[in-house]
Image 1 (cartoon, rainbow, N blue to C red):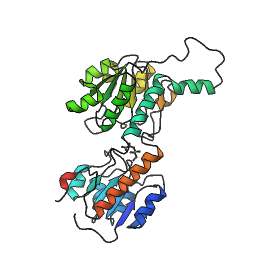
Image 2: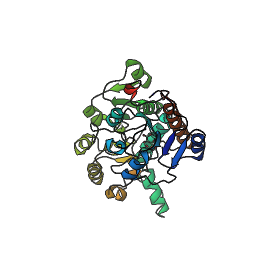
Image 3: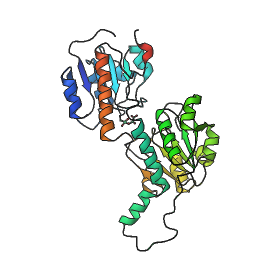
Image 4: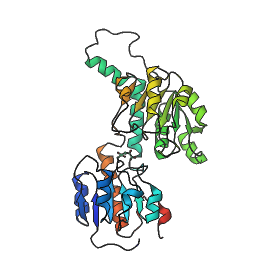
Length: 330
Ligand code: 8YV
């Protein structure tokens, strides 16, 4: 693990910005998959066989099977903060370092959470579709009535870095912030966000806006399903900027069809890029194609952090944001 390789052989599994390739070319031999379509699992595993390192995105699923023929692989660097695409046990068994890109996308992703919250609360997508459709002829008292954001109760599920950044945005809107997390924050962090820890049920029943920001795992699969949606206020919104699979999309579509909640703002979906077909027919959703971290500055920062991590690992140094530090030095 601590020995460096003179000119490493790496896989870049998806098209990245040219500056990233230039950085890598100076140091590595690159097998560059210069395309936006992900490799199949078989292709990925085949191309990892002779590599020392790899740069991948959140859509490359890396498990024991993918890694089985990789003999020299030291590190796989994810250009994403979420690493549910990595089977960390499989990495650990083979002594492979995994890294992700936290911090650099926190505020950008929090902004996106707020953008979706505001868009669905004020029915922006629906209103724009209606206007473009040529239906605006008169002002009308009761047209496109939304729900307020300011001075409402914001319920955040998952109070990591992005959750806390959303809480701070909520404070600026005069919101009462409540949160649920696997464990409560330290008193200092709670104080900084002026957020109150509550259990899941209390959050669902009291929040005017529910924001999902937790990591996806077996534990959070269908964390929001029919039962949870039934607990929410009929005037409440739900925003998911975390991962598809945290929400049971089938149950969500049914709840939205019945107007059981006010609406949903979604950036992520079960089985994306495929969408539950029911979502496309609903007026009370705002749909985005997984662009939470998509600003130019942030995507460059993510790419560069992922490259820093990869090059550090290949040089035998501990990468800055390692997801399995428990294997370091073993
Ligand atoms: C990425 C994300 O764009 O960082 C994450 O976890 O969800 C997004 O910022 C996506 O995963 C592509 O790698």
